[in-house]
Image 1: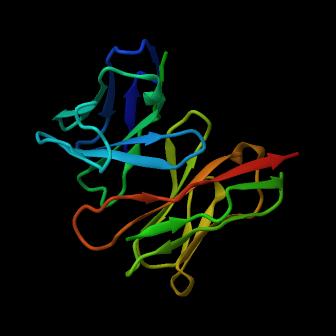
Image 2 (image 1 turned 90 degrees about the horizontal axis):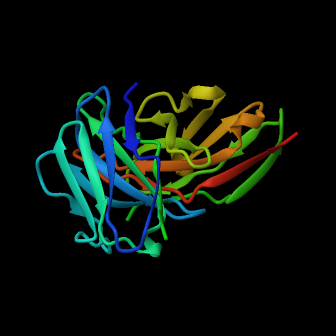
Length: 116
Length: 115
């Protein structure tokens, strides 16, 4: 099956710093990648959708200048949380769709971000 | 707008007992339907999916789900629960209307398994 990885799995940073999270499709080409945020005891909230080589499409209420998304290749998308604050602490999950996989998304294992 | 409802926030079952997790959707046409499982601190793992055809779908780990168009439901079942099944379960839908459509997740059901 299709595998998606995320790095790092866990990160702790100081308030005001920026953090980059990587999402990679390991054995398929991801035409589209998605970034979700999951609050404790809550469902997944789609933050943005990115297609390789084009700008990400952000969901309403998500600050695009704060959550920078880059989808530079068919196997890599990055989410950078800029000037992180404690309220940005959350579990961030990426997923990817690829050729031949119809409407199925494959999810990464998630990244736990803690901002002190 | 489409929506997914998982009426049970938390369910507790005894190991070896049967399990049914409810999922109802609201959408004009039959969407694609999915069940995912999430263990604590982990990403989502696909259990099973329904696109079309046979309304009883078999998945991994002994799970199955039945699509009932008349009830707009896609309930997840397992005949005998194992302690390792304790996790959070999410139902999800994608409109079956061509092109990419956003996934809508239910709010999740947390399953606790007691000895």
